[in-house]
Image (tube, rainbow, N blue to C red; front, side, top):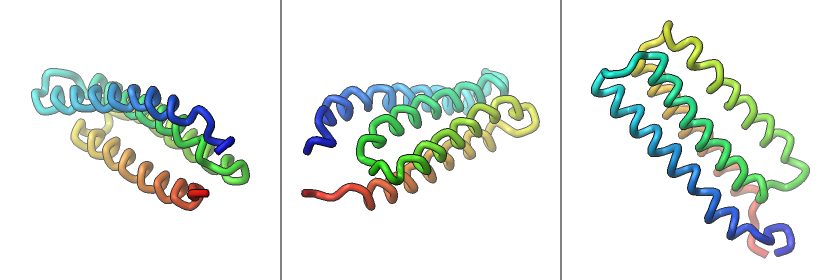
Length: 125
């Protein structure tokens, strides 16, 4: 109980950036379908939305991770953010659809690994 004090506030307010990021992703996919933005603009929008989502999820779930396993959790988050930072710069080489598929796949894989890690750590006492 003491470890999760204030967890409800973080869960409630921490999900607002997740929904904002999902809205940005939906807007990027809409512009991808309409074709009215350049590849770099769509890639930047997709990557920024993913960064917003992942940073807020990282912050929310950080409180559930045990101190002994926090380093791999943080390192994995930093690596994903670095990939998302580099992706818009190589966007001119890739197709917009490939970038969209990569970011959505990255989100799904990240969430699956995070659920697995949190599932191991969380126990009802």
